[in-house]
Image 1 (cartoon, rainbow, N blue to C red):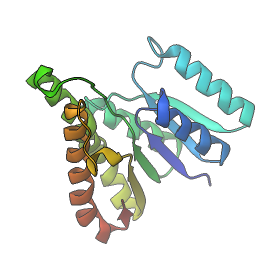
Image 2 (image 1 turned 180 degrees about the vertical axis):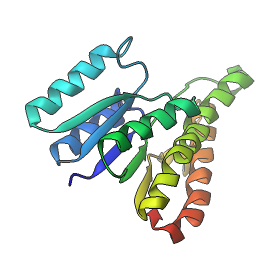
Image 3 (image 1 turned 90 degrees about the horizontal axis):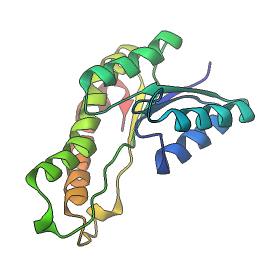
Length: 181
């Protein structure tokens, strides 16, 4: 049985490269992209063509980590096709660049919502199933920016710091159930 992996933010960048790598390695990849049948249809089609060329498995799912319903639906899609969800990769992120004082409070909140709250929403959708199955891996795509803070990226840095806190706190709680971070 193929291992299943759900990746948020698979439309470009590291999420896309991760999806492509795991497709080649034989995973059943559920690539989370916002609006894959609308504005992101070209990204969906390219990823599906890549999987077909590699004789791999991909299903591009509509995944908006700003919505609990979307997170629930993406996890439900995996579990409709397979008996378990083995890995969740938290990759979705939003990078802002500029002077700290130039960012609005709403932009800071949006970064935290995308980087940290979004990971929490996806965990809320996935963890009950991982607990029931007795295993699973939560993988968070962090950033070295939380170790050596750079200027001009304050919302991103704050969002990634918050995601680190979500990851660490969740790890303490899920460890005894067989899930790992």
